[in-house]
Image 1: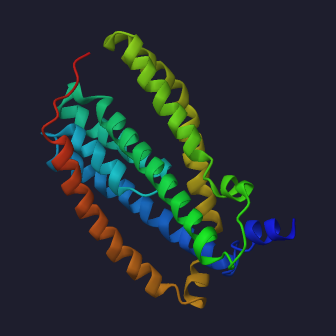
Image 2 (image 1 turned 135 degrees about the vertical axis):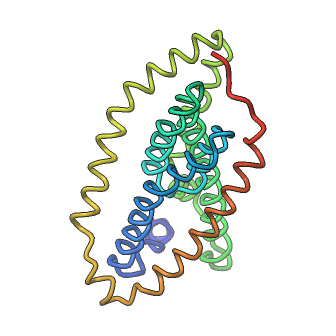
Length: 236
C-alpha cells in the first residue's frame, strides 16, 4: 500500500499551484485571441479550401472549446461565400481536434508509463498494475467511443441519413457546448490576476508561449493545406 501511495501521489503538484493556474490562464487567453483572428484569416484566404480552413482551426487553436468555437465561427464566415461548405468547416475542425486529443492522451500515457517504470522506479521495485491504470488518461476512452460510434453510424446508414443524424446530435450538443464555453471563459476572466503574472515573473513564459504558438500556427496551416486542400466537399 505504501509503495502504491508513493507511485500514485509522488508526481502530483510539486510546483506551486499558482504556476499551473498561471500557465492555464496564459493558454486560454491566447486561445481567445486565436478565436478572434484565425477564423477571420481563414474566411479571407481559405475559401477555396474550406476543409483545410476547418482543419487549421482544429490544429492551431488550443483548448477543445476554443477550437470548436473557432471552427463554428469560420464555418459561418466561409459559408457566406461558399454555401455548400456550411457545417463541414466545423466538422473538419472538431474531427481534427478529436484526433489530436486522442494522440495527446496516448503519448501522455506512454510518457507516464516510461516515467514510473524507468525514472521513478528504484532497483528491484515492481510497478503495480493498478498504477498503470491510474496513470491512463480516461478521457481517451470517451474519444475512442465517440469516434467508433460515428464510424459505425457512417458505415450502416446512407450518407444523407448519417449526415442528418449527426446534424441532429450536433444541434442538441451545440447548446451545451456554447453554454460551457461561455462559462469557462467567464470564469477565466473573473479569476485571472494579471498582477500575479508580474509577481511571479510570468513575462518570459508569455513570450515563450507566444513564439511557440506562432510557430504552431504556421506548421498547422502547412499541414492543413497538405492534407485537406485537395479534398472536395462531401455531397449530401
